[in-house]
Image 1 (cartoon, protein in one colour):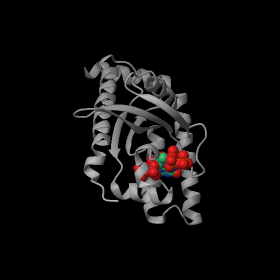
Image 2 (cartoon, rainbow, N blue to C red):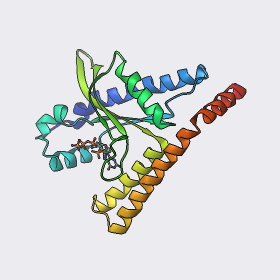
Image 3 (cartoon, rainbow, N blue to C red):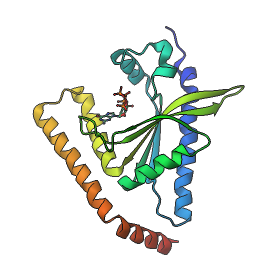
Image 4 (tube, rainbow, N blue to C red):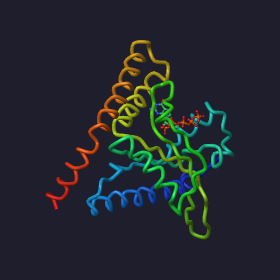
Length: 206
Ligand code: 0O2
């Protein structure tokens, strides 16, 4: 099928751009209010065409059905300081007027076999085009900095090994996932002290 990819992906690019601005704005609002912010940083991307084609082949998603069946053409990632913040961010996103959460995957409580941990929300987002409003799917991944560190490294290794890790590397990845989990646990226990330090630091800076 001949497809104008740039045109097809334009609403997804617009969605990612808009949500990045909106969510980064929230982060700044917390900073201004000198409150503990549950958002550390926000990234976003439109799925690259080669990844779309690869996923459509491996998941047997017809190219005619990308809009409905490939949920992460638009992807947003929200990094949080603490595990507890993930759930606050999820609730905050669920209460927004410009997003409709269709379903969620809690890989924080139920980690994937790989060791991957993150909270995923599959949402509908209405994006204003020239003469119509198009509702597109967007996947929002919410995770801690430690979860993000592990996932980024594992993701780049995946390119090399295509998921078929030698046993030794697999063992190390499992251990690293466990260490990231322990780090999150440890940070949560001293969360209140860190929150105090952060707010007095911001206060002094201003
Ligand atoms: P990208 O853009 O390269 O990251 P399902 O059918 O529900 O089991 P599906 O539809 O792939 O699987 O959804 P899932 O499992 O929620 O995963 C979607 C995305 O989560 C992936 O996108 C990754 O971004 C991330 N993810 C899931 N599992 C892992 C993992 O084991 N390691 C890492 N690093 N990331 C993971 P893609 O398609 O890989 O695309």
